[in-house]
Amino acid sequence: MRVLTIGGATLDIVVAGVDAVRGPGAKHDVASVRWSSGGGAVNAALGFAAFHAQVTACCAIGADVEGRWLRDTLDRQGIAVERVQAIPGCPTGKAVIHLDPQGDATVFAQRGASTRLSLADASAMLMQAELVYVSALADAATDELSHALAGLPSRPFQLVVNPGARSLRQSPDSLERLLQAADLVCLNAIEAQWLAAHRGVTCTPEMDAHEAVALATALARPQGQGVLVTLGAGGAAFFDGQHGHHRPAEPTTVVSTLGAGDAYASAFAFHWFSGNGARASLEAANRRAVEVLGVAAANLATLVM
Image 1 (cartoon, rainbow, N blue to C red):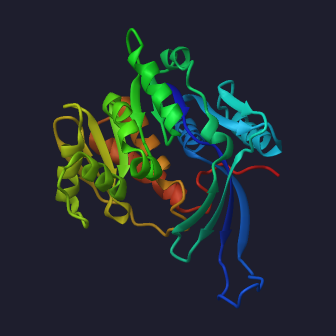
Image 2: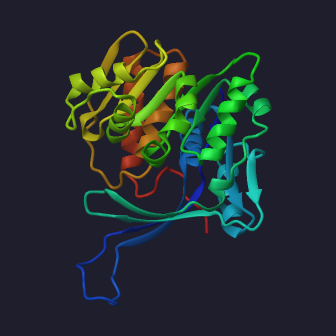
């Protein structure tokens, strides 16, 4: 399968195991500080590559040493990098991430070059793919991609959109054209509730499996669209365009939730669009998410420093 991933690229600095809080200005000992690759396009590209897909990543980095490290990381994993854009005068995106004892992440992000990704000439690369996976984008790139999709004479690929919390919260209107063009929309529970509120769909803050399946069904636009809603420890709900499904999460020890959404969505999309059924695709996504939840980084490939 030829896969194109579009979205962010960051250099992640992950801090885990902070000692007890001391006074202002005090130094804090930590268990580990790790550097790794991150961002939606990168995480998803690495996820698809794990299933031996032919992957091209489309993202933007700075013309700096951090950007070269990220590009080299993708290249070492067999991911095509000719669509990685180096933006002069703009730093590669970076994120400083603190993991609490439960593995939940607090992220301090400088998006940098990721906000400058250009998709004005996206048509040619879209037509070369069998599956296109889109993660969070800046508003300008979202508009450019929507325009490119609308101008295609045909669409020989499946489109997966994982829009991200920030875009859904701040720019839901600009996302609508892209979301409604998707064959599969991937959301976590909070994102699904934000999209529901924007569209006037009623939902409950604390959803059980039945309510999550009902919400996924209600969010499908146009009719027949697939909607995946991940529920953390509650598993995932999926509407396949006709029927609803739920799969419980696999029990696991969580080191970090960082990147788990991209891991789940990319694994599910690969298996679903490879012709596997809902149950098999949800089980494959569970297995991949467990692997990523077991490491501190957002994916299973780390930078060589």
